[in-house]
Amino acid sequence: MSDTLERVRKIVIDHLDADPDKVTEKASFIDDLGADSLDNVELVMAFEEEFDIEIPDDAAEHIQTVGDAVKFIDEKLAG
Amino acid sequence: MRRVVVTGLGLLTPLGWGVEHTWKGIVEGRSGIGPITNFDTEGYGCTIAGEIPSVDGRGGGGVPGEPGVFDHEKVMSPKDRKRVDDFIVYAIAAADEALADANWKPETDEQRERTGVMVGSGIGGLGPIADTAIILKEQGPRRVSPFFIPSALINLTSGQISIRHGLKGPNHSVVTACATGAHAIGDAARMIALDDADVMVCGGAESSIVPIGIAGFLACKALCTAFNDTPEKASRPYDKDHAGFVMGEGAGIMVLEEYEHAKARGAKIYAEVVGYGMSGDAYHITAPSETGEGGLRAMKAALKRAGMQPSDLDYVNAHGTSTMADWIELHAIEQLVGDHAKNLAVSSTKSMTGHLLGAAGAIESIFSVLAIRDQIAPPTINLDNPEEETAIDLVPHKGKPMKIDVAMSNSFGFGGTNASVIFKKVV
Image 1: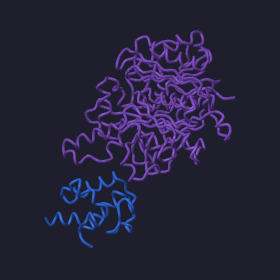
Image 2: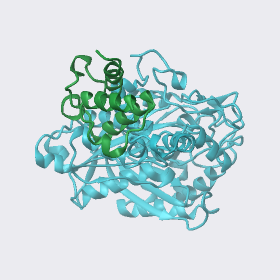
Image 3: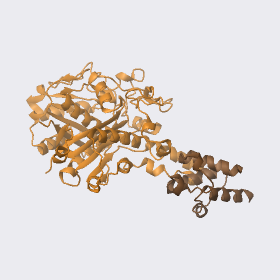
Image 4: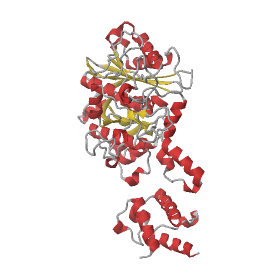
């Protein structure tokens, strides 16, 4: 498991009070983990803070799953 | 117009969590005031308040599971709590209790659509507003939480309660400073009387014991600063040593119901809401008119609506905030009742709870209803040396058993807004 995935999972588990077993790469924040649109905004803010990056609004709209977040963050960190 | 009765009660006050727990303390004359634990009061002229005794240690705290000690986690998960400021949590907790007490669980579409919510607050989410302003200044707009606005908005009390219980009737909210709770109950009763709903969940909630709240009321010269070392003695309406109000927090919620609807389902009926009167002082932003004529007109309007005479009143729960305004209100009551003064009991339960601002009128309406249920007038504590003489019994120190068929609750707010609600025993 990548370091990014582990850190993303931790944020998602904490913020959504989610069952860790359900927080897989494929898990959708809204469809699988009980989030609403405001939770998604908060998750994106938490990712920005954790990884010290900026996630523009149009990119944030496409981050719907744990895997989406990991992919975006890894690409961003790779420059 | 349709008759409206009280069928459920819920309380969360500085005296504890739950109607019976708070009421026992009130009748015994127990103070809920203590040192502020919610923040460091270094540099503040006032260091005391009526905080909710909670398992996290707030308000003197207590052991989880101990009667009357508030436990946030029994009301909301940590995930949901970040979406709401404390005043909303308090409103939800009191509404849960009131709906359970009323044994009202609307299940059909019609029942849900005929059950509404009318809960207000005096100033709502002051805490998150202040905290978010600091984040905005220090970290910029992108760090403002998406939950900031819905956690601070006053009508999210009514919104959250409706979502939690599936209540799809009128959804409204009152904001009239310290008269909020009384206006919410009176307005909700009207919605039932006018057939907009059969059941209304109504009342007020407040959580302003935060740095900006204490500093703001200190700046108005409204708060008591003279009893920081003896907090239980600080709130002393009618006493010659009164020195300003003591802030409290919490919520009071009533379930009101159309009379035939309540009877048909065999609901327990506490009392009938028979009168509701309102007025404006048109005088000053924070002070009542010197003659108390605004409050007097609200009381007269409530009696008129009830079709009653002043001599029908047995007990009045006064606004009585432990300020110079206490005697202005009392003189207005004397003027209203004339010779009946000698038969009348008037007390200020703020002597025990402190002033819960937007929740005050709601918790005090509930105390008025319980006074009718138990035939006991709650006391005014700390009334050691009345500042003036009066023929009215101010019920010093301990509750007094007496005949109470009709009770009125007065609430007056900044801006010169006044409300009186009258409750009557149902025989």
